[in-house]
Image: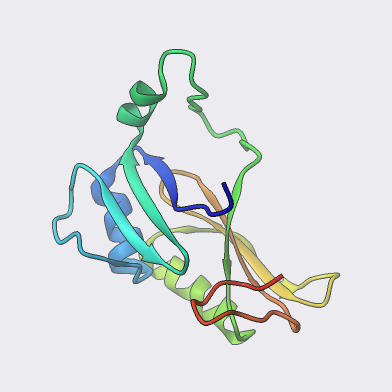
Length: 143
């Protein structure tokens, strides 16, 4: 198993999440309706999926790791950008889309520039730029 093919977020309000990701942040998808049963977004090298949280919990089973409440679950998603100014632009998109800026854009100890935001369901994202970031032909960050 050497490739992540889909990252799935269980969402509490599909319509609100669709408006945030599709309409606010501009993630590309074929989903036209505001409250689909499931939605996949095209991202470089993987698919990003929104799925109703209660159905995801049911799919995992009664002993699954359903998180309710606002505690930090120890997972963040990352959105890596090719230019430093894209961090600021992305955070403005987040603000306009109704997301919560958790950490304002700032320089980081490792020489990069980043910020954190959370989506309508509280999932944390880091938006990061690094002076040595390189991307492959598919837009994936090369390590």
